[in-house]
Image (cartoon, rainbow, N blue to C red; front, side, top):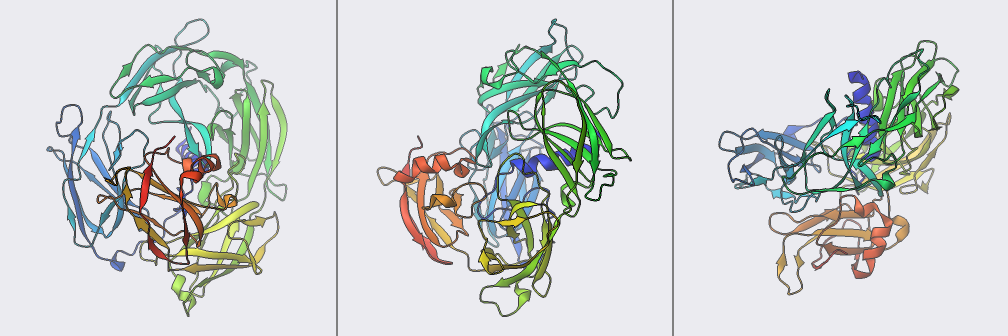
Length: 563
């Protein structure tokens, strides 16, 4: 697959699986706003060491990254021969730190369990924080061999470790960590796995990107799970301990009949979608897997060979990928059952133009929103919602214009470095509040009269957590969510979470005014807060509180054991 195809598939994948938070950060694939480093001093320093957890020896050339989603800061340092690192000239803020190296498990600062979110590090201007150390455990290793139905070794099989995770509020089987490809004698090796339980899948996609082939051979192999089944419900989980090596996990591929999917892709005027990329995104089994890609021919025709049975989204879009919000996109749902599918015709849809203005509460001039960036999120987390993101910048006079694909869209904003920290107060369409319901964007229908009201006065809830005997607790996750269950779920502004900093204090910023639950749990799975069933289970043990517009309040909580 070409680099263009690979980059495009990665962008599509992450646009689907990226879990939205409240307020959401700018999703991967969106250009970041220009960074004005003169807007605030950069004088803080973080220092520490990275060690091998098993031996205590320093790790050289380990990478330590500091990320602040609030101020869009992303810095990287590499350890020296003594395992020491230093990240300097940092602006004040709240940072997430992670350390990684080769076959070791990547860890975030403050992480105590596999797949747990780390803790933030709060730093002030001019502050130097020492001894922010990491002890990286050796990752687990899984090795084995992939053969065909006759026992013959099979090369070039993609082998992945997978586990169920919450993606966009739904529990999905998702690849974890590095992938492996079998060698000439069918051997694979997956390394650097965090301890946990996994499903092992093997997929042979030989020739799926061949543009045209006269072959009538449809014999092939379905994605197969350990021990030897194409059905994930019948798959066997394997448990990997810290640094453990599991050997001889052998898989015999499951024979199946492959199909060719062919047709034409045209734009809204019936003209060929020249130079577009045609994608097969499989939605069977987990959130979004790139199953095949090809380029549309000059006459608009396309053909993707060797497609295994399953449910897919067939999508044609320009080669510039997700950033091309103004491009036409053609999309259809396809079920492949082993027989060729010919004569498909997918027709592109022009993006609609959405225009409006931005007002800032309490500001006299429209220039108060200068430097902010707007983007759109799909209001649904269904597999079929693979719309290209709309991106818009706010003009000096407060007006904006966005190109959006059809569908119900939520308009959000991003406050980058050099621009004021703001939150959405309301989105109105011709005076009607559509902040959380979204705008219904129809094909060939431009929309005007959108008013986006922002505020620089963000709510702030902070505090500490105590245990059963009132002892201070420094390892917890605070979840805050609206008492109105209609405000739960994907991309909700009314659900947020916080982890304690180095002093055991948590902070949750930017919640809209309203009536809320708050609960401090000893552990939750990443993304679980977007699952309404999870929130329903914990609400009866939560503390109720009210939050005013832009209110800053303290809220101390008792630790609750997750069930």
